[in-house]
Amino acid sequence: MGEPIKKIRLLRKTSKTFLWISFVLMLVSTIVLYFYVRNLLQGEIEEELRSTEARIETSINENGPMYQLPPVVEIEKVALLGTERLKDTLIFDPSQDELEEFRELTTYSDIKGKKYRITVRTLIVESEDILVAVVVSYLVIILLVFSFLFYFNKAWNQKLWHPFFENLEQMKRFSLTSDKPILFMDSEILEFSELNYEITALTDKVRSDYKNLKQYTEDVSHEMQTPLAIIQAKIDNIINGDHLNDAQFEHLTSIQKDIQRLTQINKRLTLLTKIENQQFSNIEKVDITHCVGSTIQNFNEISDKEIKYERDDVIWAEMDRYLAEVLCNNLLSNAIKYTTGNADIRVIASDKTLSIANHGIRALQHPENLYTRFYRESETIKSTGLGLAIVKRICDLYDFEVDYKYEKGMHTFSITFK
Image (cartoon, rainbow, N blue to C red; front, side, top):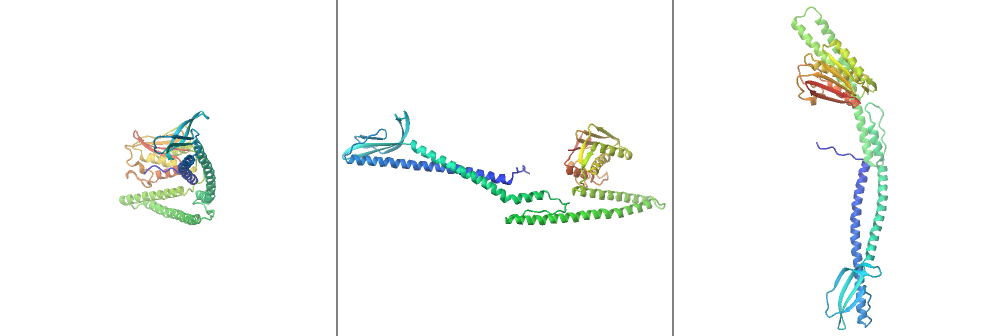
């Protein structure tokens, strides 16, 4: 799988897109306007130069005076006619005491047998000033229009999407265990109304299915307990009787163990269902170190494994007290069950982390399956395969971190509380 996509809010995304599109359009339109106005002004300048040149030719042809106004107009008799030239040039302007840029038109005319070179010029500075003024004015106007459209578009989008965001908040507060219906805000947008209808139908269906499944689980769990208890009692009576041979005793003992295991599986599955359905809502501040100590004391009475308990700090956790006891019991039970030989079990409580280590001959072959229901690394040890699954669900419920590692011949489970 690739890297997760960076999330961004809807309105921010649309505003960002609007900004980029507007910026590109402004940039392109400004460049186009600049070159268009520039070509337009150059055309006007050339038209003015040719008009001035035509009036000068007319004046000379009518025997008028040869008007001279250097460097704007220069008329000179020449021996040979040349080629017309149109160019930009720099000429020193004594009035400004600096070089000025001019647009220059040079033509040659034969008027009444005499050859003339007529040069007319005009300042480009004025046209550049006009060009800058036009572009700046355009930018100011477009920025004002853009600012208005941006805030108007943002406000309009907020109003348009308001029902969607309100309904999204309602969905975040949706709970399977609550009978309170979801009240969606109606909208004039057809798609939003259709979405509300479909989500309402979906949540009603999910809530109904959840209730049916919950009721079924509770009924099955309750109904199984009685026959299992009756079967267990009858087998106990038969075992305690006097007319059993060794083979019958062995078979009945095996059946008794299977019934006990089935009873345990039923209880643990029921517990897992309740945890996943978040039915443990009695949250309080629990002393985990004290809970571990009590659990160790209970196991010491029924187990021949020695448990060494090192407590550096008191660990507190906000959780259901019963689930805290289940968590400690399952971790210690797992360590006792899978430790090899008469090796000690080490329990360390330090810096909000509870670590339980037991000796093992080799590392697990599939540690990624540790928290999978009914998973057992080895069939030699009879277990329900649900203990660590319950540990993981409890940690997920309260956002605790659970970690497993195998180092120096020790299987170590660590729970970091928050």
